[in-house]
Length: 606
Image (tube, rainbow, N blue to C red; front, side, top):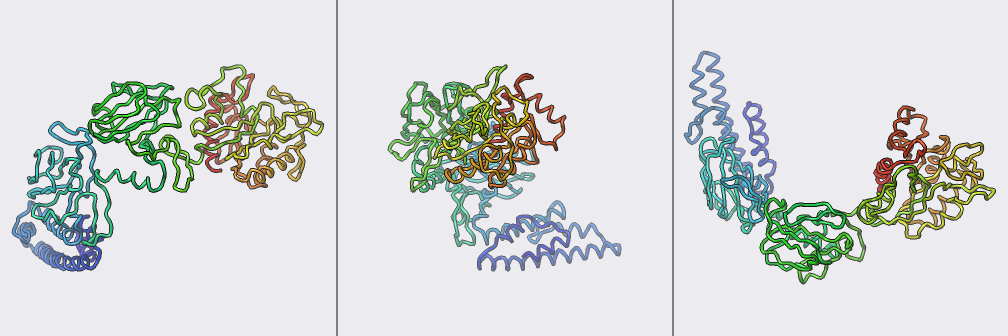
């Protein structure tokens, strides 16, 4: 058949995309035999049309009656006269495509398979959302053809361009008139499994309903596409995980929100809201712990109207009067314990936990889980990590698990990702330890050994204070700079130099915290660029990922960069917008917020 389509193309006759699709989808012996038979028919028809075209060209060349030939082309094999030669060719090719579909693909005879249903219906007043009906948009129709349904259609609206030409209610079929090109067809949800629309005359019993696909009557698989089969997806989830009976799993959570009886979503740090959880009428549900508010609406969009509204604090059970979608408001203080399940289904872990069969737990929140969620992060650094907002107001996290905590980058990340923090960052802290022992706020002086054994992630962000302790240094960010710390060389093996301290701390973590994902952050704000280069060199030596906040081709530059490749103008802009003030050049609230996105991405790559 493909060769015949090529012939049509070479004859400048449009090959219907349906013909091409049908040709490609023919499979199995029966399909090939039918395709071969139809190919012969197409070949004969093309030969006849080619002959007519040849005669047309010939008659035109020697002064023949071109108009007569064109009128002849408009006459089909069954004697029907089309309005134009092109329309005649297209209608005949379309008829062959339909016959091919009917022979080779039983499911293709159902015209609904080329559309997709949406909850709702289209009537005289337009589209309305509803969970009891599903409407198929833009189902192609042809003038003069009658169509039949597998079950009664609640509403049928037929268009010719933008003009409505026909409307029917409770229809078993309809006929398209001149100019009609598409229809909107609404079926009842309860009839899912028998949604069929086909050309009248076709045996409805031989047509597969919407959502099921068969090839040449040899059913190699069925796709559960009807709304009645959708709940089976949760059955599959139940096979994979324990606790999947919690209907909140996988649903959208709006933290710091609640829905009132007027169907309006409001902000409040006291509440967390689950949106549009499907529930079934007449089924008993259990809520734990008690919900503050519960609203059931007819569609995922609350505009469709409320079915039930419960505004009594401590709601532990409910029974919807009809199918709908529940908006459930919990107290935020109960986070980690949210459950909504059908009564009698005891297999329901709280919302933020999933357990794979075999008791492997995966953390979950906000409808999904990721590589950071629920992890313990050992945050090691100085005041660029701990924060120093002297001379301005201290920013705090407003809601969630860490509400009220200073809003520095680690706590912002932990709040978003529901992480646990081991805070080993302190202002003025150095990595190395002065040989004379005159300074004690040193990470290499035993602090690194306190990294939690169950830490999932460890980050080391040092350098700025080591540079303030270098010989001849006059710099300071207001911290104690007593005690000399030299830069050293990459082969140093004791903690009295900057290089040496890295060579003590990094291998200890790799050996003694083998399950932790280690990352190094090259500090901005150092007095010279030597410390940035030394940090990068150490990361390479030990095969540890490194994030350079001084800016490179992969990382945005933060304030006080020492990278000589970056212009002084760019550095001045960063300093002006990201420092606390002229007398305090630590990162301000905006800088920590920005850094949190960059560093969070880095953590996800470890």
